[in-house]
Image 1 (cartoon, rainbow, N blue to C red):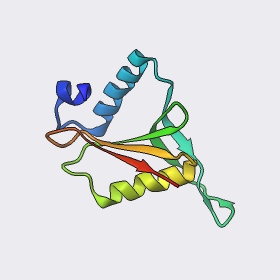
Image 2 (tube, one colour):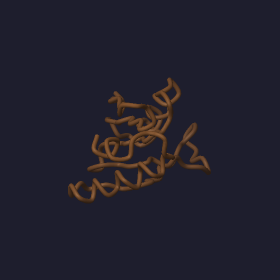
Image 3 (cartoon, rainbow, N blue to C red):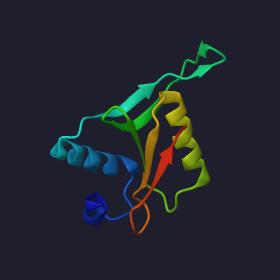
Image 4 (cartoon, rainbow, N blue to C red):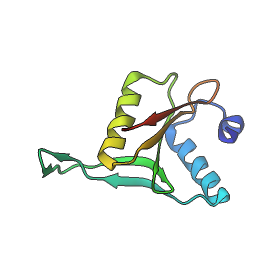
Length: 108
């Protein structure tokens, strides 16, 4: 919330990711930025990976957006990332709206 209060909306995603990284460092939260995960299809490894914006504590996936509104496809993307990474909890955070918007997504 602090990031949105200071920066407001309207910047590209990378600006919010940079600010979030500073806040994670300040808080002493263990994280990886732009962590890559392999994707399998019918037991075959596909040549391309997906890149998660952040993984916190090795068990929370953070997907950052800067758009006017969270769309259904953003939920689907985050859910698929959770399935591929085998992480159970994701946060979809959108800095592009007038108020910070975030959704908690759980993958069974």
